[in-house]
Length: 140
Image (cartoon, rainbow, N blue to C red):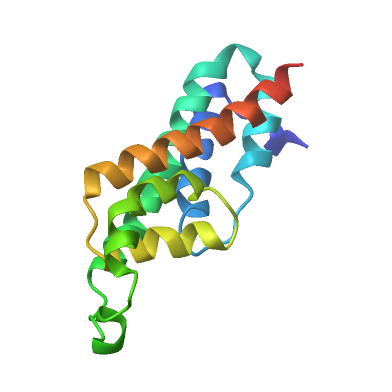
């Protein structure tokens, strides 16, 4: 079990990497890693929460970027509620943390070329709230 002896710094890098990869199409369990890390290092609460949120938000933005390079299809361009979806789109990224639909929301936001900064802000808030709940549960 010597491999479990990681320093807090190594663990923080692991949290960042895991949260980044979990926000792409790769499956991952960054919440479980964050929870376990904070059980071992509760003094690292804020750095761990910040790095998990940062990594997951950057991973979501990489999916957003992939969506920007998808070609536009004529049939999808003529959707009847497209204007409404584009107007409310960034706020939907509060749910970008959700399994399955979160990646699709990020990809669609990029495909629609929604404002990247608005998307990033809503995405980060949603992901931070999710990680905050996980992190808080680890210190109770």
